[in-house]
Length: 86
Image (cartoon, rainbow, N blue to C red; front, side):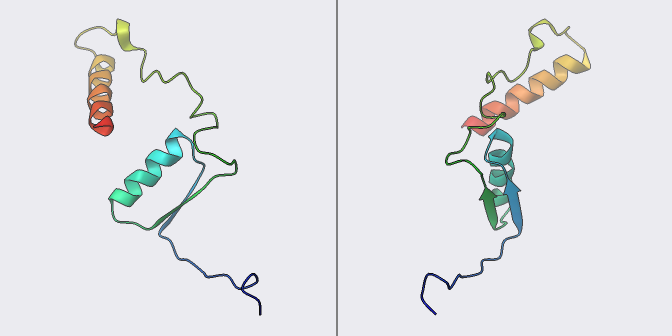
């Protein structure tokens, strides 16, 4: 056999399909948990699909009333995003 017909089989714990924001985030979380991850993306680059092409707005809670569940969830999301970006 020529080397071009021999393929090495790799084993992974998780296969993530899609290299958008969601796929990359899931893959990152799995890697940080110690799992072997393969990320499968159809296009030639990451972040070119729907989740990567969004406006980047994390939430629309500028008008959320103080003391509501919506406001609490927005504050939690902002805290998590800041931690993720560090």
